[in-house]
Image (cartoon, rainbow, N blue to C red):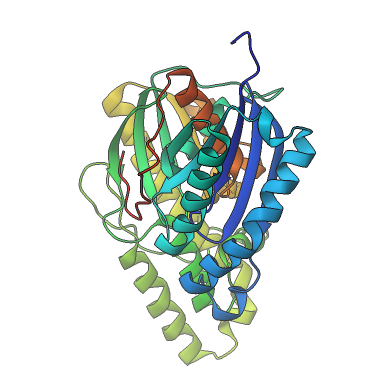
Length: 340
């Protein structure tokens, strides 16, 4: 741990949440998120509306983060921001603000890959939470991404499996939409699944080579199933909602766990960490706890506030880059597609 106080102000604006956090030597002093409600009526995130909302929210969110952390601007050691991946308009708001503020305060600027940050969230200094030891496998699961990553150091990460089409979060949300559930539907599928029979209905598991995933065929299978059943009985969804949700969730978790088992077998690494919005799903969390008992894995499950997009994870990534003096130039630009 460094002798001096390293205060990182972190900014996250990759999608529809405007977030700011302050971390001191890896420990969170504040973690503020402004959620945008405007998208619910459209059944998904509208990029133009998201970037406008970021412009409205970014100043008050950063002000609140500094106030809650009980520090002033001159106490900030560096500014970390999400460079990508994400929605271009949203990223531009955070990137532009971070660059301007760092330039005005004459302090280092640190660019962070959003997907790396989901993994590094496990290294936030948090009482009662173990940190993974290198090497470990990380499964990042969200609305836009599904990846299995081999992590050998803080910034030495290799994607060994990923989705060839849709992400797992989209599979949850689109299935929910087919069932007539409001956006975002993934958490509602999880809620109803808890009271349903996971083996009531059988859905196919896509056959994909290696450690890669595919969810587009699964979504189509759910659509055809619902269309067929509601044609025979218009009240089918209403009568069977909990069982349908449980069966959808059971199949999706099965797809994820099959690939994770394969990855553990191929790499010989049995430390597994999850991250991303879908890692809040109770069924996935339970499947990993079961895997610990069944196969002797060591699983790392993040706190709920670090699963969805937040600035604390950007801050911890920024902190470890600060220790390496890995700073960005003021000419840096946002990248909507940003691999690591």
